[in-house]
Image 1 (cartoon, protein in one colour):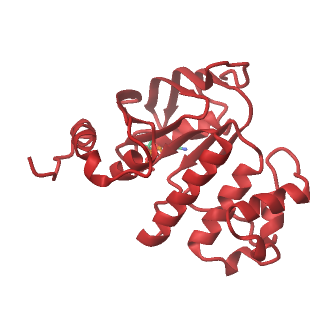
Image 2: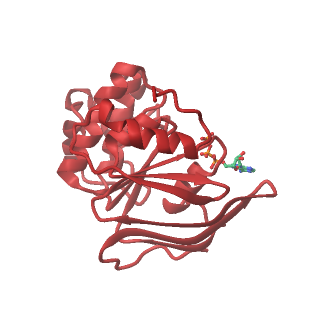
Image 3: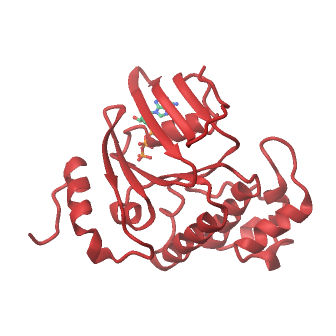
Length: 241
Ligand SMILES: Nc1ncnc2c1ncn2[C@@H]1O[C@H](COP(=O)(O)OP(=O)(O)OP(=O)(O)O)[C@@H](O)[C@H]1O
């Protein structure tokens, strides 16, 4: 079982030699990774490469990993599906914590931050996909996480909703400055949002691209880093030479 809490100074999360076997396969085979305070990191990798396994371990949801995980403060996770409890109203869903309930005022404030204060007393099933994902983000934020783990939170959204939730995540990140680890399949999404893009393959981090560009970013500026990441993912780049 990996260590969980630590007084890290420069970093909000440190993972060393993380290993996990699943279904007879070594899915994680010695992952090393560190996230600085307030840093936005994106994680790419082929389907089945172990991205969700890594996030679950960092969120403390998997006790069968080997290696070291140190998180300085609280980690909160949001998933691809919002995972709201249908028989609890929206506000109650935010207040429901993994570790005890949070005060109502804080839950209301979190809901207001994602622009849904008027939906506090509604049932989750009356929300659109984008709204439900916003509630899921509010539920993570209300824990005031030092580390926010996002497991493909945009991938089930249509293109326009996706852009608005991208912008919301960036706004929330600027306001609260948690360290973020975002799992995505979308190279452009990773490059538009993150300070650093990592690639997971064969159970290890095999590639890192630093994205040293101001936000909001222009897709045209991302051509070179996109090509090198696609190359590492084994995808032929469609960019003109
Ligand atoms: N409980 C389990 N039992 C056996 N194998 C599992 C279990 N959970 C995950 N796996 C396997 O572990 C591997 C990694 O899964 P994981 O969900 O972490 O991959 P991923 O990179 O997030 O994939 P995707 O991009 O498709 O979501 C996969 O091959 C998956 O089938």
